[in-house]
Length: 124
Image 1 (cartoon, rainbow, N blue to C red):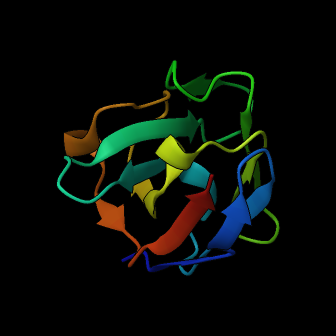
Image 2: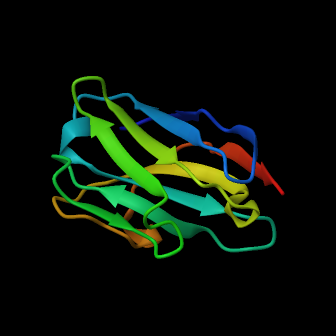
């Protein structure tokens, strides 16, 4: 069983930056692909970024490429999402998720565990 807890969300002006963190419990964190997803009001949950179990491979949604960076620290059971040049359309609840996969997984349905989410609001 893996438990995930996100933190770091908040209110920021357009063009600003935020760093989201996700803390994981469990001894097998380093064997999971980790991902970030987001869900805006009235919209479906969508993929944002993912990182392989060893951190060597990453994948990003086109909408965040060049602005967001995903990273992980397996020694601390942590995964991060550094968000820069934020736009109002980035406003959403951001979720951390874990997938039992040795490759980078981008499909929502492939993820086995989810956090409770953290709100990110970008004002114009």
